[in-house]
Length: 115
Image 1 (cartoon, one colour):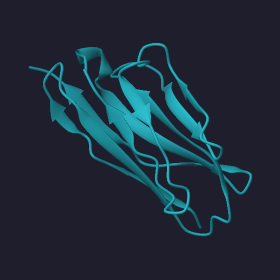
Image 2 (cartoon, helix red, strand yellow):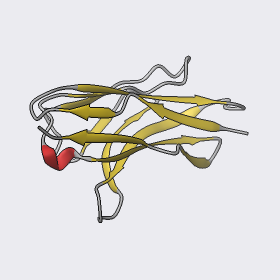
Image 3 (cartoon, one colour):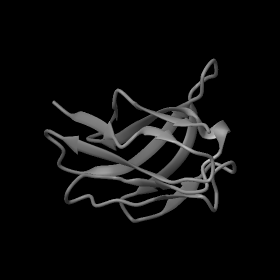
C-alpha cells in the first residue's frame, strides 16, 4: 500500500515563504511524477507544479517565478518552496504521486496567507 503525506503548511504573512514537504512510502518500485495541487476556499482543485523522474518541471502560470518544486526519488520526497506568497495562494495543498501505474493523493496541508 502506498501512502502520501504532506507537511509544512501554516499561517504566513503576504510576501513570506513556506516550504511544503511531500513524502511517499510503501511499495513503490518507481515514481514517474510527483505534483502539487491546491484547492482554494470555495473553488475546485487546481494544478500548481509537477516534476518528473527526469527532473522536468511544470508550473501553473500563477506561481511561476515564486514557487519551486524539487524531488529526491530515492527518498521519495518532493518539496515545494513557496516564496513571495500572496493571499490568493491560500488553499489546502495536496501532493499527488504517480507510481506503479496509479495515482496516489495525500490528505492535504493548509496554507493561509494573511496579515
